[in-house]
Image 1 (cartoon, rainbow, N blue to C red):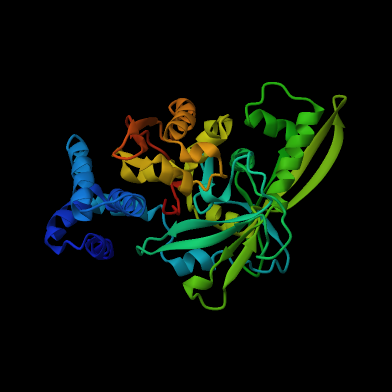
Image 2 (cartoon, rainbow, N blue to C red):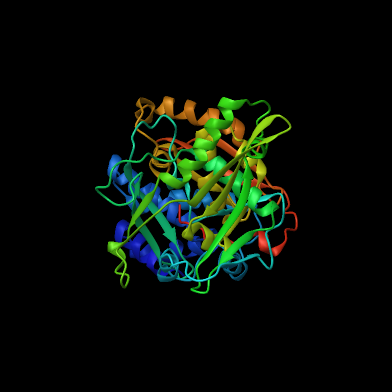
Length: 417
């Protein structure tokens, strides 16, 4: 039983007599669903007049319990074993793994002993939707709150500075969903080349691969492209190296570390040569320390290559956000108000954010593409916009039977959404 969540509910609702019902809801629905409904209650308390918080939360949880009746009985032990593959053990482990180790001594080049299954993208779920924005965002840097969760039940909300190597640094630009799709395609190429890595006597490890820009365009499902498009694509790869992040860890009281600045790629080298009368650009790409460690430690969720083919940037960010949640819910339904989803995705300010109908219309367009998506284990994403009590809501679940995946393709350290 997650007592801290029950204690939080009692503190907000001031209704200790309903504790048995809240505990039952937690057992049957799981922590993530109850936490989401508690978040909905807190939002409504802030924005509307809620006279009876306990009654409101009870109604929300009863609705979820009714929906859950048709699902198979929740198995806490099986669920706990499932989420074990999605989390680092502790917050200390998670953020200690970020710290770089000096690359000293003679490098040993090798491949992972048990590489990821070819044809999939191992997405390090430490790198969540908070790391990317929409192309409409004209800011060169900003600060958002990113959430990280570990197996010991701890959740950290970390200030994430996007576009700066440290606070006060010059603005270097914020990576967009387009950059994220390119990163996904690079990771697919890394897998197909056998998951190559550099290992140093000091203990430092980095992943690397060789990427032809033409091959990268094909992985992204570009049907036609010329010199200008390939030059643009090359520039976008370099952005993954030069547009940094800074995590403010001062609130965690970690020993000897108060912040960490990093990029997603550590180094990019370019070689151009003539091949069949055409200029071929080949990049040697080395992943950064945090990304390399997450991939090599298998803290990554497997995603099909089709995720890199999503056209809508909003649809891509939504998928990045909800997929780990849907996998952990194992077929049960997830819902979130569109207003809260805008905040979770840290979307750049726009007039439609404050218009209920506008929110519905914008998100509804993204739903069309999301409903064509499947997870790496073959389950269909069923996503819709439904009317909530005070706002339109995104409602999502996974449908269909899971296909058997190799063990190495399913390891992840999921951020709390």
